[in-house]
Length: 84
Image (tube, rainbow, N blue to C red; front, side):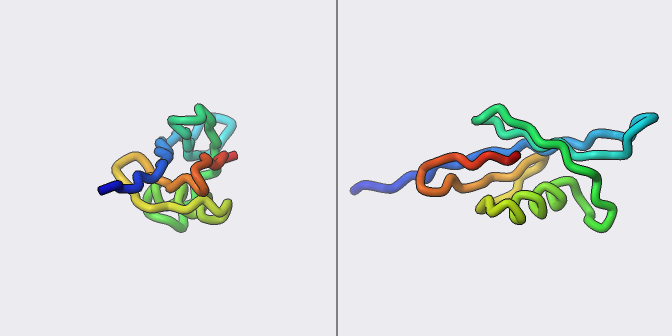
């Protein structure tokens, strides 16, 4: 019996508080590709995970689950997608 194991990406999500010169932001870090992307805080949403999900979905990244402080994405055709 052979089972097919899917490649997954984990995107770590972190809140960045406001500074004297910048408003609140959200940092997403891809733990495999070691890339990060900072987006503006969206006050219309409830959690930083929702903000990251909205951004990643708009980029076409297939999200298969959410966990505390992160999002799990499925690699498309075995390749990992850039979050930038």
